[in-house]
Image (cartoon, rainbow, N blue to C red; front, side, top):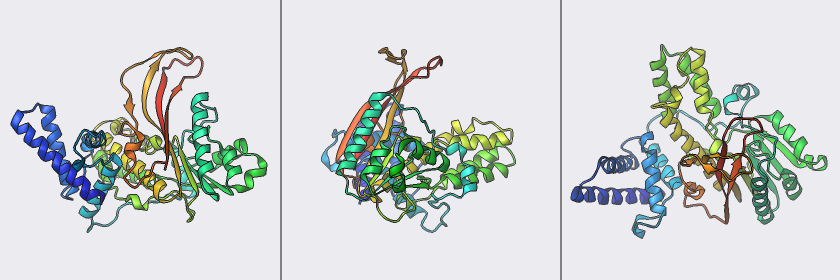
Length: 397
């Protein structure tokens, strides 16, 4: 069991670190790291809930586990394993409490209309040729090795580079899902030949299962608050009450497992509408719209995003016969005009709380193929804006 094994690993390293600190002394940073290990151990014992401030120490510890720098007895648990273990501990701690959230992916027209903050930032323009070619090649190679039958593309509006025509030709049925049905219809008209469109099914589906409930919860919390401080407290309670398990997460309203599921350039975008949704509600009351961008809301939202992205990964592993997962993993500002070599302006920022996509995969994942590449995104001509350089990683599981 992941939780038992990971709990043992944390306990061993906490004891080792504490003893080392007592023998040799330690600076403030080391003392904080040891205290964080102790707090994570308490979480895994179901003595307390995970604090968003522990996210970075957790990622650092699992990175160390996967680096092979520790003896084998510590295990090689990933960040994904750690999140699932924490979720299991949370479920034990809350076992006598009433369930607050549900995984609710299917949306009515009225609910979908109120989710503008969460809409996929769809683009009809092709990406940089090299990025587009590598993404298409990886997906098509996975399609060639998949069993015949059906394919599912979740968050189909997230990438304009998907080989949708080829997928429609390869599989008997192709389901495309996202939040915006009219945009999906336009995508089909633009990308798939008319002769193959009868094989295509469109589905409005929220892969996080959280957006409608979050938007309604924010509206209630802010609307009923007597002032900004009360609103912040109510919002924090809403975020920290999230209690959906990874096993509840789905990919589609259809019961059957697709032969191939594809999630491309979606993972790092999941949950990024949470903060703008809160800002909109605060603006309507004339209050500070930057509150979700600082503590205590910002770290709590970061942890919520971690959970919903992990749930999506879990659903891909559990609810499809095979799955392609492609995502930006880190990003850095890149100075230098189109066509020039340029240079990074600062350090890359991790988009998934880890340095590599495989660190988000739990131990149940069997990686059949993987690839990585850089994707440079230059601003449109005439726009005074730096380019962005992203590290993109792809896995077939």
